[in-house]
Image (cartoon, rainbow, N blue to C red; front, side, top):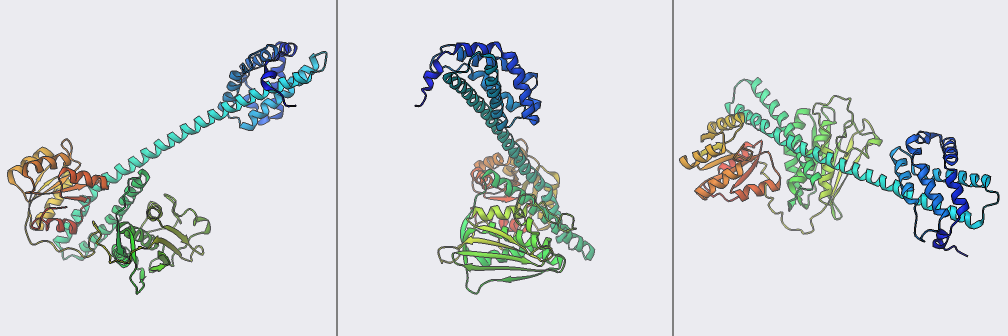
Length: 534
């Protein structure tokens, strides 16, 4: 017949309860000694701080047995919870906490058998069991609560640290764009100067390759922080796979030629299409080809292929390079992961490229995998993406620059450049003058507005990060004063879609990321005669 727990809890067992209360000192001494013997690894917890609360626990257990309490009264719950909390604080495991009560049960029954002049009755034993079970339950619950609270606190701390890291990387990437803009503009100046000295030509090409590599690293940092924040927006269009492959190959060709690699491209005779973000697919292919070039000895062979397989488009990038150890295949896409750190590599890297590949592919409903037979046997990276469902003609991709460089416009423009960074301002102004434009400069927002209203330039190039009166407000005031009579171009190291929207809402016609590509700037200046719509 099952026990009525409330009835059992309310029954007084005065003799047993009083005996426990009188023997608290003996019980604590025996409990502590036996706990140390049976749990030597937990012996550190049986110090005075923990022992101080035990008299109250035993006192309340004795009281609950000796008195006739309310059916739902559990006076031993509070000290039992303290027991669990203290065990958590000093590093006990949950099994050790439970074992602590098992030891107490043994010590308690042994003590009562020694000191009662009669055997314990059946109901007295069950009442003691119930009190101890309730104490165990309260203690374990308190232990778990402490653990959960600590885990939540740790999770919040990790989340905050991760957010600070992402914020730092975003700011770092933005700040790097300003000096890079000045350097790339200076490289373009060297190109226009066209020195007959072949050494200067060689130095300029080296500078251009290395700075563009830094720009790609900065872009990777920015993209990873955007993905981590959930702010990377995809611009899906239907486009030909061959178009993306062509752009990717043109981007990495200087790197491949510099390393003496031979690249073969295999595309099917039948055109295939993707419905994805074309610029991001190009970025994926560029990162994979760059990775193959980086980990292949000079003069290696790299193959890029694309094919339709069922409902998917499959890209494969194969090389005959250093290969990948089997245990690295599962972690090769992890952030900051690199292989062969001890080997000299001319291109270096942060270990971000493959991480970005995986995240960009997965954001577009695809998957990527790495394959290698081992060190020295080359590697293959395979990207699967959903094929376009409609067999329609490829749609134009907004924001994707033509692979063919634009010729400088023959029309001289009247331009005002508002830029607080002296090197960026002077180098870009010099470049535009060499291209035949009439250029004035201003170092601050109010000065730039005054120049604009006085001289009425055709184009105003405005750095968004101006101190004091920022570029957004400068654009708003100029647009309010002159309407559509001027082309406003934003220059910024912040390149997210949200930044572009803010720029257009402030009145800008064009948003150009730093460092500004000369071909893109030339195309923008060529739009003055044809209208200002962005």
